[in-house]
Image (cartoon, rainbow, N blue to C red; front, side):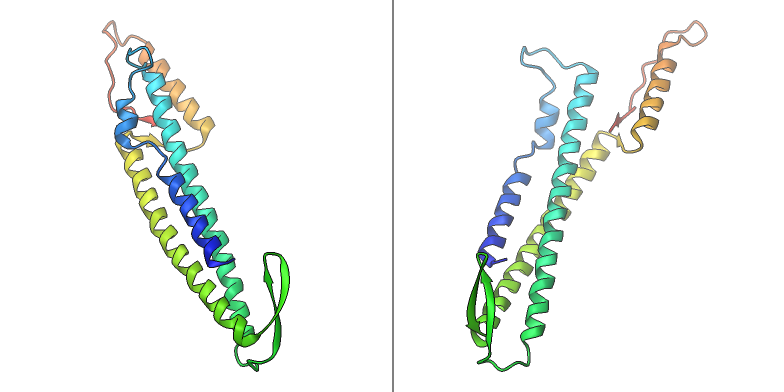
Length: 183
């Protein structure tokens, strides 16, 4: 992978991570298009969808880092294979899917430059990944999102709904707060 390709892939990842709505925009979007406040279920769905979007971005970024790490390992393997060989020896380099005949003294510096570019992109994407994970964790804690087995979460949610709907010894239902959002 060339340095230019690695750089362009990082810019596409950067633009996708900045397209996610901020915490404030999710909280501020608590009214529908007619200006009426969203129901609790709609608000919960909006929060969960935003969190799932953050998790999808994290997964996408982690996959890209893994792909670049594989490219880095291939470049390191080529550099090790070329080290110690006669610099005037012929070798073949794949450029855009076409094998081109060059000498080791021409190819090795280019491969080393590409390796440096890949390592720089990996470092940049890793820092973006850490920040995105931090943002997702803050969002999860802010809205008390609980992750787990969807069937168990649905069963827990149903049990809580049933308990809330039953009157307790002739008393009015107590409004519960801090219940959280299930994802």
